[in-house]
Image 1 (cartoon, helix red, strand yellow):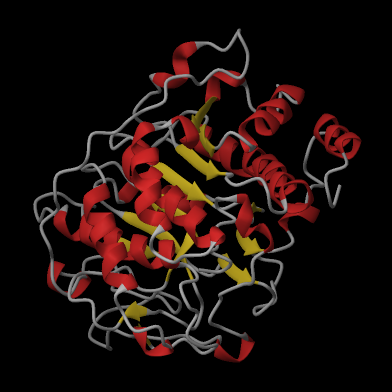
Image 2 (spheres, one colour; image 1 turned 45 degrees about the horizontal axis):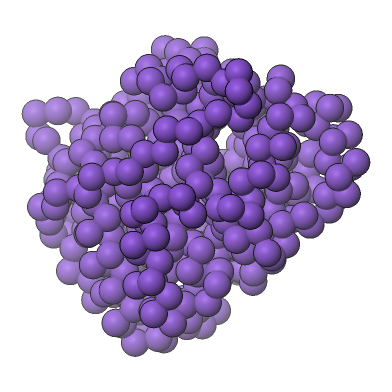
Length: 394
């Protein structure tokens, strides 16, 4: 949730207020399951070896996925080879979204994305290449719109050594017929522009993410600052219909009145999704409508949000949390180890929001609002380009 407004996402979220639901005084270890289940000190769910019943409350059968509309025009320039469209099954796909460039684009959004890519390329990509479970450099999928698409393409063209064109795919949602069918419905829901953009991004995840590849969904305000071996090692163990995610320390929320399985405390700006059955846009829409039907108060969540009712902030995060809980539960196969899990990562993957939790310096991944200032690891060519264009913080 942390800023969930979409800095993952739509540029809009760049300047939106944080929805952390936690301050430093709430930082504590919580065992919501009970002493009978072995827990890591910061583990917000049952540990490995738990039974299917202890993992989720009420498994719900998955629904058929909508046919995905895949944009095949992935070229940055005329020389872009087509191999991005047929990556190996082990290759990690990193998804970013940068939508609605009318708000904070030059001051926060694109600078944040540039810094985040630099850090991912320095720490995550080499680790994935060296890891036996992946053995390849990650590829990138960028959700854009007609406003953000040209600027992002120009930035990537300016630094071809940062991410080679063959590792990049663009999905311009303004050119996606399925997106254009959803937009009128979303606009009648009463959401503000930030949350409309975040829901648009989440719907795109349902239809554009390939089901046969491991995926890492990143917000623009994510800094990869060290060795991500915990993520990659766990990803190599939980290989089918399983989720690994960043949590909100001290607030392992669930949605109080929802009867199905959930992924407690999930933060929408850092989610790893394994291979598995296709995600389901129809199911996502049903859960979105369920959340919209709930009373707008702090009691929607258990425990209650310490900072208030939140309105509809992070609605995409809460809906995704329900969708992925169902997806993991439905994919659990007792005969297949590593299937059907929904597991938080350690606090080395820290959600700091807008300053509620001070970093300690030992974080591997940090989610905060200072990402656009953290570009010391970018190549000089990138820094010079950003400064020449007048992007904020550079």
